[in-house]
Image (cartoon, rainbow, N blue to C red; front, top):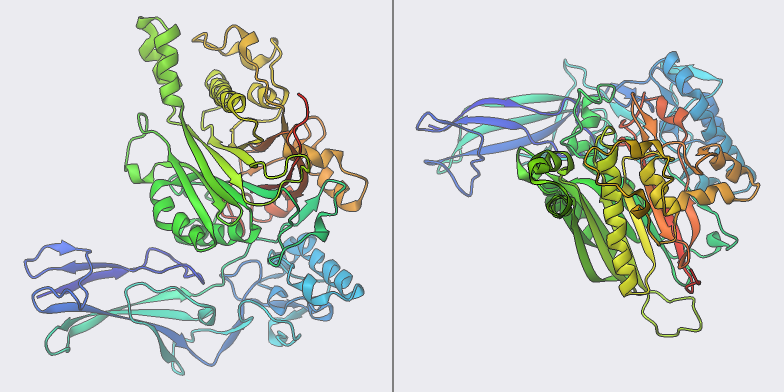
Length: 600
């Protein structure tokens, strides 16, 4: 007879919005073991599995720490209540938690006070982040207050499992999987699995049960503002969804989302395992991406299966069409479904797809070695050059108007390149060769069509390096130290390392802003030498800029940029990824305006 051998949950902490799928090991009638489901619609020798999920409720109440949602709160900030900060942001699990979070948390008080002074309380409170809460005045757990009248996404006072008596089981699900809801926060969930006779519908033997930890709310990334950098009054042109629009303007997001294949506890031991799990990260990443409402989204490190099963269908619900280029697998060893690649999405109401180009650097390496490398050195050369990297180039046609009054009715095309130059630091020649190869391909497209261009991605290269100089300056000084690494001679003569595209880094616009308080804040997060962000990648062992959005300055102008994050705010969780931010990179976003082409 069918029987259940073992049941366990892969995730140690259940999180709101993150699907729970128990591991159920069965013994078939023939004594073989399986993890295949046996539903009522397809019984096995007259038996099937019945599942139930329950919320365990009791009368004991406890508040959740706003910084560490897996911990109960013992302190409450009375300053938050006075300032009308959402009550769920006022709780802390310890005095150390409160003290550590104070520098970031006091901004909540300042924003709330500013909003109140301007008579804009509700709008500002909706923008407050969830990174922490606190004030100079605290109440203890015996007097936690939950009545400041402000609403929150999740209940701030919830029920705690007592373990003895007074418990009520509330059925919440009848399938194998269950996605915790806001009402489950703070409660333990109970999963029950039992073999049922298909004919009599009677349970056969005892049910197998398992209890989860208390459900926690999903930490939400802090809102990041779109900062105007041009003279245009961008804030004055918002659509019904709050997205800046103007004739010929659009927004572009570039984001390395950290492939699950690379998100190991060994590399990111400082990140809680529940926050590192893909079931959690994918939902947090999706929330963040959707919140930006970008017209074009360029993602890197998107696994093949995650694109097909999650990102493409989920972003389709938000009006995006999806294109994907998987990395090649000459070097990769393992399940090809987990190979990552570059994914580009665009809003169907803003753009239509015209053409797609796929760049495989392995193919370019094969052509290069055939042409210039002696036969005896080809194997060594290919081993050095083959890195499986790709680029996805998409030509789109805008559905919005063009500002150029002298070209009424002219098609507004746009070329968007999305790449991930995943090459180790030591192989400077390979990294530079791949960037140069991509730029030469884009030059050919530019020569065939008068078209604005965007070059987005994770280039794994810091400002001032040879690849960055090539992108930003169109050439490389022959004395650049990176050129010393060229064992195959593929970079010589160095005079060939040029391109004619008038590329400018979008985020350099922050360095040219006026003297406002906001401008000064963003400039402090920029490197004055390179005019690039101080960092786009922040781990425990490295912090620096690797990601860029370049644009052709003769056809596009930057209107606004997504504000940069400061290192201090991220270090409260040691580094990235964290419960708040689910990648080790930060997202970059720029709004551009199409311009009449200027003479190069």
